[in-house]
Length: 88
Image 1: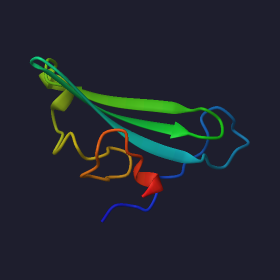
Image 2: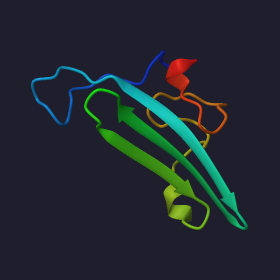
Image 3: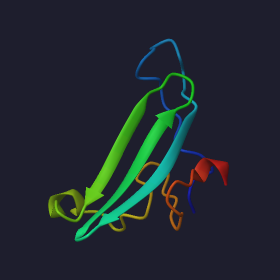
């Protein structure tokens, strides 16, 4: 079972903040032979952003990944592209 929200952690932009208002988002792109699945973790307050992407033309990006459709930040899965699991 996935957490209700992405993990809260100390803000990387401001050491005085004890946590960030983190949300994650799934994106999927296909063009010819190329498929890209990406996940973005973003703080809605301070703008911190981290993205992890998986590309079929870079097989090393998918090493040790059980499913590219599972969020590496909060373990949400089965989402449609553009869906924010934190708003579910």
